Each structure stands twice: as C-alpha cells, then as structure tokens.
Image (cartoon, helix red, strand yellow):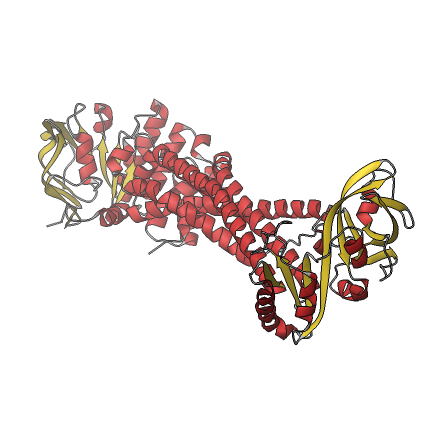
Length: 234
Length: 398
C-alpha cells in the first residue's frame, strides 16, 4: 500500500491564553497522498490555517504528530524542521511575502540557497521557473515593480524552485482581482494535473474549494465533513 | 558552519537602503575618524620630537634646577657657577656649557617688549652650533669681548615690531642699556620652543650687566655617547655632595624623550577614550537600526523560515549586516581620519611646525577589524531576536 506524503495523527494544537485554553485543533487525523488536491474550508477560527501550518511543518502539534514522508516532526529541532520544510514543501501565501529588496530572480533563488545549491545552478533553475510561470521578461524587477498577479506568480516560482512534492497555499487569491486570481488558480491546477504536485489549499470560497479532489470542512478544530467532489480518491 | 554568502545577501540589503545605511554609519564614521586622526597626529608629533632630540645628539646631558623635569621655577636656584668646574673634572666630560638666563624689557624707539635674555660663553659657541641651538643666518656670532652686543632670531627681526624690520647694526635698549644687533639667527625650535623674543648675549654681559652670576641650566657634552649614563650618575653624586641637597636634576636626551613620550602617551589615551565615546554611540546606532530592521522585516523572516532558512542562517544574515555596517563605517572613518590629519599637518606645516603624516597599515587593518567587531557585537541582540522568531507568528505579523 502506498505511504502518505503527509500524515496527521490525532493532532491537537492547544493555545494557552492565560485563563482559557483554546483548542485550535482537537484530534485531527488526515492522510495526504502524492497527487492529491485538497481544499480546507471552514469559518474563521475553525482551525483551517492551523491545520495547514501543522501539515506543512511550520508548527509543532501540542499532542499527536505529523509525519512527513514517514518521519515525525514533533521531535525535530527548529533547524531540522526548516531543512525538511524547505525540501518538501512549497509555500504560496495570501500576501505573497516576497523580499521587497530582492529582484524576482533573487527571490526565486533564495530557497535554492537554503538547500545548498550552487550559485550557477540557482540562477539557471530560477530563470527557467520564472519563464515557466510567464515572467521570463521580468526577472530583474523588484516586487514593487510588479502587479499583484505577477507577484503571486513570482511566489509560485519560488515555491517550485526546489521542486517540492507538496504545494501549500493559504488563500492564494485573497489579495488578487478576479482575473489574476483565475490565472493563479489555473496555474495551481496545472501543477497538480500536469506535474503531479500534491496541493493543500486553504480557502473560504466554495467556488475555489471545488477545484480540489477533496474538500475538508473544519469547525472548532475538527474535520466535520469530507467531500470527495466527484473525483476518486486514491 | 558559517555560510559566507550571508555577506552577499547582507550587502545587497544595505545597498538597497543606502540612505538609512549611511545615516546609521555616522556615529561610527566620526568615532573611527577621530581616533585615526588623533593617533596619526600624535604619532607625527612624537616623530617630530624624536627628530629634535636627534639634533641634540645622544652625547649630551642636561642639568636643570628643581626636583623634577618640568617643575623648575625661577625661585628654585640649584645651579652655581662653581658647578661648571666640578662637572668638568669628571672623566669623560668634554665640555660644560652654562646658560645665564633672565627676563628683561627691550625697547626699540618708542616700542616696549618683554624679552628673554640668554647669556652663553662665546668660546663654546661651536658646541651650540653643533647641537643646533644656534644657527647663524647673517651677521656674526658673539665674541668673548662683546658686551653690548646681541643676537636675535630672524622671526623676531621680522615680526616683533609690526611692519618695521630690525636689521644688523641697529640699536636696541634692554633694561635701559643700549645693545647693538651683531647677528641674526635662524629660528631653532629646540632652543626657543616657539617663542621668538630671545636675546642672546655673552656670559660676561649676563653676569655684569644683568647680575646673573650663576647659570640657570647646564649642557654637558661627553666624549662618547656610551658614557652618558655613567657620567650622569657621577654628576648627580658630585653636585649633591657640593650642594648638600638635591636641588637639581640631571637628564639625558633619552630620559627627556622618555618623559615627553610618557606625557604624550597619557594625552593620547585620554583623547582616544573621548573619541571612543563616538564609537559607542555608533554601536548603539547600529543596534537600533538592526532592531528596527528586524521588526520591519518580521514577515520576511517568517517567509524565509517557511521556505527553508534555518535559525542559524537568519542569525548569520543579520550579524553579517551589522558587521558590514560597522566595517563600512570604519573604512570611511579611516579615510576621513587620514584626510583630517593631513589637513591639520598642512596647516601646521604652513606655520613652520612639521608633522609628518604616516599611513600605517596596522591602523587600517586594526580600524577595520575593530569597527567590524563593534558592528557584529551590536548586531548580536537583534540577530538573535530574528533567529528565534516563530515562523507562524512572524508570517501573521501586522
């Protein structure tokens, strides 16, 4: 039987806010296999972003564990976690989070540097990917010189630079107009369909969520519904 | 392991915020510039002083009144005419020259000036010429039989009376007595320490006309410079014996130079400490800028961590940035410091006081290392704050 790329095992994330304790996640279990496209939906405060953070090794669970390719993250230190995260997961943020002082090319080269890729290979790879996302002409532009859609494409290029297995997207179209948003979603779709990338996406818009194979509905830190959206889950 | 590429990234960060970087550097630049300028100038000063002593030669001993160098007063009168013969009898002594000094009022036509009279024995004039005490510009040196004759310095001849120049053969009144100018001397820094109102007269004139029976100071020339210490000791013993107390001190070129260097060293340290205050201010400036940068880039730091930057790498980037800030500040400071020192040296040179500026590679390397070190130390706290940030909180930071 195929092993999941990401697996949450009865994960709790509890925030101690002094007098009260908030359960952001209370006992979530989830298996994500290669090639899956999963949307996470739910009202604000339902724990959908926390689930994404835990699944992408940004956050250690309070109880339970998340396995990345079979290895638990709860016992890794910060530096190990960073290495695993950098290699396995590509991040796309709602607010892009590009480095404003760096050009598009330099931004895309950054994760390759973290993985110890040589300068020449970094430049080559980053240029290729920027061309692939349609920004071959804009490699030397800084984020402030690019439109919102272009910035998100730089961010996607950055996420793809190290050729990760999983793409994690938190409201990727939240800061974009509908035309640019549609282009970005198409790009994510293609990554899943054509390149077999596993996609985990948080959104609050049903129309966007429906693009996934599977929609997880969260409420009060629990998965309350698991729609398969007419596509077969492996 | 340190990834040296953090410097490239840090440099890019600084370059693309040029104005802020330069403003941050100001304190460091001023501090390092002040230190370099002060160090260079005081080194130049000690070189100049050393050169002056070299002109004296190492084979001379100074006998002065008082207990200690620099504390002689007109009141403490420790040297007597007889001392010349006592010292002369010591083996190894070639010659003893006495200086009979007093203050007087000089008058030229209706203009009065305070003057400093130095009497010497014209028979020993050649020694004074050898040691550079007196260098004749024009006219002649004093002769043993001269009484109402005087030698003056060239700058006094030119400057003392405004637009009226003094010349050879002109007559001056000193303490009501008439003197004729027979010689004009080159300005010798050593003998006059920058003052120009010096009137050289014969020993006979000093003793008979100004009632200066005893010399104020003695210069002893030894036959061989290796005998200097030995002869100095003997002079001390013999004079103390003769006087019954130690109301004089004996110094060689070397000991005089030493005490000059000591004083200069203390002045140097005090000035350096003052200049260091500016470096401390510069360090605080760098720390402040780095703390602001860390706060401002919180989300960037979160994003960098998310895409795989380790805590150590983030720490490295910010420390490298602070270190580079310090280093660039230091480098600019060194250049400005040398330019300042050169400017001051040029001004001093035009006033007749040579201050040779030497560009010392040790100063440059040390200055850059210190400023970089100060920058790195200033960067530690901000960099640790950046490295320890929780990526999730950093990414959500508003």
